Length: 464
Image (cartoon, rainbow, N blue to C red):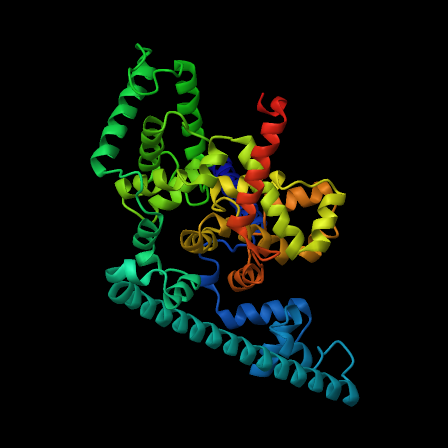
């Protein structure tokens, strides 16, 4: 009985040892799947002994690696740089470089270093030049601000037409005084006050509330216009505000100037119900908002739109618009005869590209900073400069445009390049002569208007 118990105990111990061995083997396999070593295994062996065992299994004797060999070992797997590829010896398992090849590689490396240094020097010089130009520009702007604030603005009536001021004006008005200069140059022939703006805005808000609640028509000076017309105008304003300088985001819903722009456009529809809101107005109002306080922007906006050229376009006076286009073509042919002939050949009329430029005063077509410079001189020279600017654009791109057909010309002029160089652009405008057969813009326009009136008198059918 005791013997059988002893045998049973031995069998159990043997089974337990086999079971443990099997579990340890499975555990080792599990670790090896993840490239790891079971916990505690390394702590039981000396690191040198582990290294020796590994080398015996690999069949290679153990030798400590020199620092150079350590570097080479790394380079065997991944070159550290082009320098390593050129200057270092080849790996031990490859033939050594011939002396000529090694010399050639060294020369190539030295040439690369020289070229890299040249590039660095050129880049450093470019940055230095940029910095000098920026400092020069900032100094120039600072001096101009002092001149405008201390000399010109306090004596506006006597100095605004002087040669010195006109030259300074052409160079661009400093942003800090731009709003003041624009206000003075545009003037206030309509005698609009801040109080009148508040009244127009209050009426506009009342109108919005009435239309949103579906109430009765608001009795005001636009009583002759239907509710549908006013709703359409309000909807158009909403749409155009979100599309005004979308890249700036400041006029979008929730932006800092969204409500201001909406207020000015709404107030204007109450102030001039006979004109109402027309697409393109939002860009003009937005540029003024960026440079003037709200009420002053409304005053400048209303007076600007009251100018003959703007009123002709915004009220869609077809006869007067055609007269402006005809005057433009007189100077187009005078300044750019080759391009003028090309446009005629392709039946490209001025209305295709001029309408958008005039409606937004170039603020939609040109980069904003460049558009503001156009506005600067427009405030100085009036409507004539708008058409001179158009000819300047055509002159700047004359070589490109003469190689295009109707479709491509129309597409190009509708969306001008965004990287227009400012100085080249204004140099091109300066080269345009607004004089034809000793007649200036105003004289040519007046003569064409007279001819148009005489034609209307002689042809009754043109009146209808």
